[in-house]
Length: 447
Image (cartoon, rainbow, N blue to C red):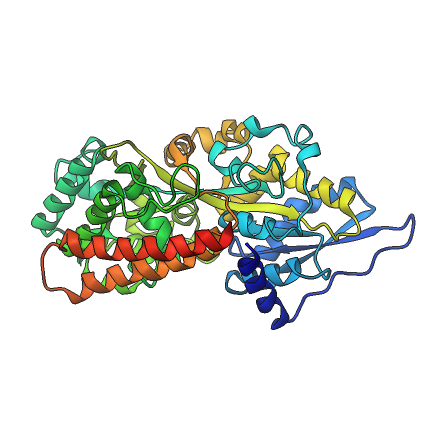
């Protein structure tokens, strides 16, 4: 653990800080500094809109928002965590909570759990990221949730006499992709390829593979989180199935050089029949082009959403998102908690921000609102959280994930570089064995 903390400290020394505003005078208005990432098309406007009712009800609390780019956020937050120059409130990616909590800079909100509604009132997979596993602490309250599902073109399915039932299992999903490939359909001048998925240049490399690993019965860590499980036979089966969708020509080879946003754009434009994406894609397909959406596209007129296909050991989706944390060194902890409580538990605040960002609410009761319960596409995501799974909230995950991203990236290099129609399982196994060795080193340092 000391080595990991030392790593964070060295990073902190090399970066500049965004300073907090000075404490307000006794009895005067309090200004809270809050860091958020660009979660929507208009990040500053949208969070201010969500906070407007709170500020109207609490005139002595003003909230100064700083939007921090996702690419810089990890460095800025870990820098703040190793100093006393901090914002009052910070958005944390849910997979970062374990590492940043272990640095000892976040306020423990365990005594506020009942005020927040209790663990059972939150999306279960999201609540597992509220503090380091088995620590008994709550250091980051789930705010917005990300889950993934399968988007498909209903017009393509109609032409080929296919239905959503053909996508219920791994075998059915793969056979459907093959039928679409063989059909060589052209709609409105575009040849329709079966599946769009990104390769190693995506920021979701690990998230993209996870549902397949879990559905095959595999995992990244052993149940006690003390050793790697990534080279198990089950994990190998899951990785092999997903990787070979590309090797077997069910994905255009050029897509493996794209990221999620680019693949989504191609799906929206009508080039592919299927892709996996989050609830924000529903927002895109229901938003006019003038507002950054694709509601006038052919796909927007012909799409539906279904869960991930069921694998040998079940059906899973990755659940991520973001949490809100209060720094220990905040001079206004009570006021900061009021803001966190409002954003994470108030139905209107959750609903307003989810509508703007496209993400899912962390609070389970919000799913009963018509916005989530009426629209068929959003209902799928409402169901998806029931079989959602998050990564272990451990101190070393923040270092583990980039390592896995690099190792899985090498696998994608084999896909693009090999002329074989199916990637040899032994080649995949070698990479997973190497990943296990690297993981074990990180795990040992984190103890």
